[in-house]
Length: 46
Picture (cartoon, rainbow, N blue to C red):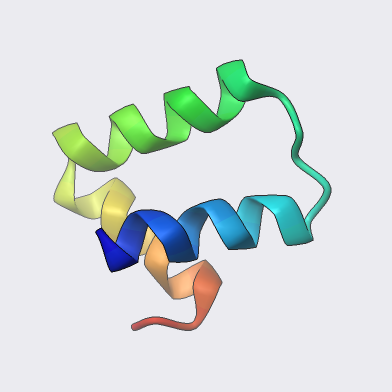
């Protein structure tokens, strides 16, 4: 859950407001550990 919050915060910080894009990113993270790792590295969590 903390990962989702961090990813949402990062998306917001880069100006992403489209709920469709946000949902797509989160779906990618659920399906792929590689995608999750990529987005978490962007947040600074990894």
